[in-house]
Image (cartoon, rainbow, N blue to C red):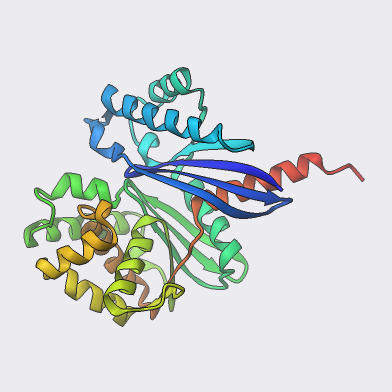
Length: 308
């Protein structure tokens, strides 16, 4: 079996995963996450030299680790972290010169589709609403029996909302109201507030996984459980919104790197739960990285198949 590496450069984190693969089937072998917070290095739509330098440093570490594995091929892609800045080309060129990594900056719609493509490996869904609450954007895909339907990318994420509206770690009530207003504005702008109801939501990405881990810890759910009921989510949120010592202890124990982003992420999810009128939320272990790898493996298979 051959090894492939995928490096996902997000607004909040950079994650490298090494997979073993045969044909189009794959399995995660090694994972490394860096909480870089690239969105924090953007001012007036431009990523600073410090931010680009920090990214280069992380990618050089990734290259060092890649040398320890016999990797057939590696892929590096960026989402809202680099697509939503004015100096994308400059940043990508500089990263290539310093690290040798050629970064594929994917569009919001491509990210949403790859989320769907990745989820379908783990949990083939016949209907529902898929969401990916990232640091710099939120992707939404409606799913029907014949495949993906509406595909949208909202320019709001847990980290960008925290940076724009939250003064300290935990948002105040007035800050929450501003965040909620912004989320509703973005949904209405794309007419997503008129979507039909869906009984099931499917979440991918760091925010969804963090909320699942928090619920597992707080409610003593088994680690293998990936399905949350809305009542279980509400029970978790009720505890977190107290913002007391127990809430801080739960966050620090379970997901300390998301202390400042989990509340804006919850507010986005709350709007989606209300919008969809869902009963359950399935948290997939796969997402955009697996979708990206699955697409590349399919392309490779197509180019290597003999002509009939």
